[in-house]
Image (cartoon, rainbow, N blue to C red; front, side, top):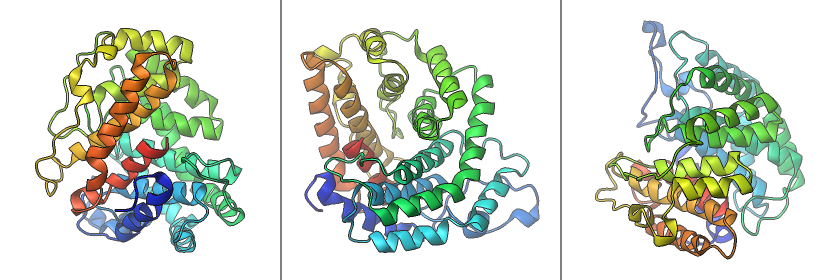
Length: 353
């Protein structure tokens, strides 16, 4: 594996995604069939997001490709990536993905993990179209060809992004309780990524609703015991909630909240949050989730460490926890398809956000 810096590893990550983005099988569908006519292949059901084992992994594989294009203009396979995305992001394909959502009994399709990743992809396109500086460490500005491509893809994908933004607007008011698991349904993760889209799109109603819901769900939380990891976690319920609130609350409000939520972090408690999870079998599609847990914890630790004051001992602890978790998981991004079809995405999150 290349040297472990974003600049030197990005071409490797792109190669990993390109190796599975067109791989239709094996495939784990989230598919309610209303009648026999809906017995179809993944590619027929989802002409954009049919590869990479499941719909949401395909979505965040596309996100990785756009993030790589946007933030690393010297990307070795840039032309190939643009060609692939031009073939995927077509009005016809988007209409098919939107139409799929409109069929009966599909209101809960990919709720909320897939919703959030689709909006994260849409946000990445908007950032690329706006030609802002890259989010990755050492990344330079988006090149003109990629900027134009992102603007084009943003316009084409907009109906699908709006469909998922509308789903959040419909779902959140009736979601009385948060879902605190460490898997796809985790509410804090969904809110955090949807908030990135709301900011990039200038969607104030969605921004306001996410803020209101996050405060309603999490503002009073204190003394989190961090009973984790479960055996199939790829998100830390504790750290993901903290990262969500970091995005929602201004820093002068967030730090006191963190003091209440995890009051003993300076003493490295709860200890489990500082200890990378052990992965006993990387051919097991659920046990290998724990590599993702280590990467998503690294992402959260990196972000949380950036918001506490420099003099705060928790900053150094967070930086060390970030590196410890990243080092535990990064060598295992490739090796078996059960992890390989998605782990690079979480590695890129951890290293560049």
